[in-house]
Length: 111
Image (cartoon, rainbow, N blue to C red; front, side, top):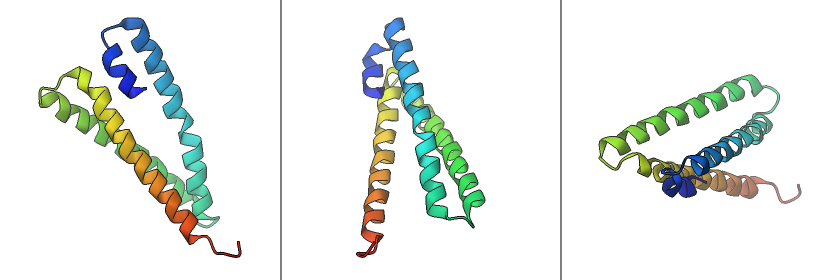
């Protein structure tokens, strides 16, 4: 959706629709990620793990704002922002896939 948003920024209705879809997609990731963190933490560490998960979301928001500021300051303009956001999203996806791969490797053979 972010890649599609870049050329659509000059058109009001497609931009509004894509932003709405982007909001739904972004919000839909929160619950599964929170559940994964809580499952990994176990009963004893759920409160700490939950607070660290939210802190990570806040850090991601801050880093995204910083990357957007750097993009605009570099003279790339507002149209480049969705593409920078898509690149950051791909990095996050790669980290998530790597984490899932590590989980599969750590599962005992008799489980």
